[in-house]
Length: 217
Image (tube, one colour):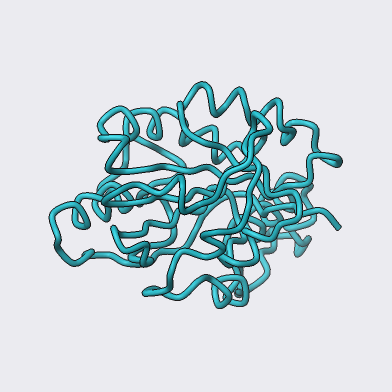
């Protein structure tokens, strides 16, 4: 994706992009904008919940399956990161969202596919602290098997499944990842509400916006 289509020069002809701050901003923008190739691998709408019966490990060390964790009317799977600033920006919104849910009917499951050996903040103990704060199950996906099955590339990355465990939405949490005060459309909350009401999801896919998942090499 082309971020800039021309070079900017000062009146003296010096390339302004040589400024370290500008270079840093350009690099950051390129990291945060999802590439087309990354989006092409996302689990297609209408797909069944991937790896539903495979054994997964929760932050407290116990074993379970996605099927066992699924809600009776909707399941939201969220690829998360404990160190990503874009996930940090979502924490209050996530708390508000979770507080309004019937947890028996709607299940929210966090997944961390980052390499905990390279990034200690992504360790099981840190996952457990997040799980306790949100009161949700948090899976450590150290092999990145879930990440690959879902086609997730960034954190946060949200997937909503209906009562039949069929994918009805994937992408961003809302339309203003960087500023909660500017939110106009709550994609995930709207998708869950539609599923619970037996209606079609109005917006079924958006681009995930966040930090690249750093899987174990």
